[in-house]
Length: 168
Image (cartoon, rainbow, N blue to C red; front, side, top):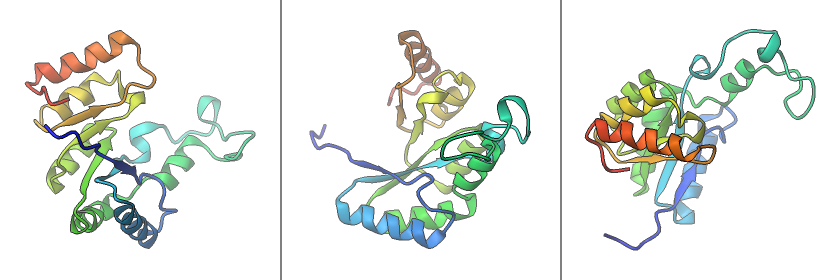
């Protein structure tokens, strides 16, 4: 076991819907000495509904005033069409490329392109079907616990173990 710190740089929505910006960011990450680039894999429908009222109504104040959750997730989502190219560039720079999937289809897509590990986002700690399905792929997993209670963490670990995945 190595004592070296594993440095992960988050790309996610830091691309302004511009592939070249994403590519240049990965190159800068490589120069910084990071070991890995992590993205988020989702489509707006993975996270919200395309509605205009109630909880889903446009924000009435703040930096996102006038935007619905659908609008924000649509703009922030890293297009699936970019994933393979960004993975290739990341690996060309001797870094690992992996992702936080937000639905089962995202896991299937990430399996197709061959990511080496998965990260479960903190807000998905209670999404046991996602955790279980992801764990079933047998790859190392990082599970964020920022919003979790102790029993949430225990349930997530149990879901992984039930799939035979102990590399958490």
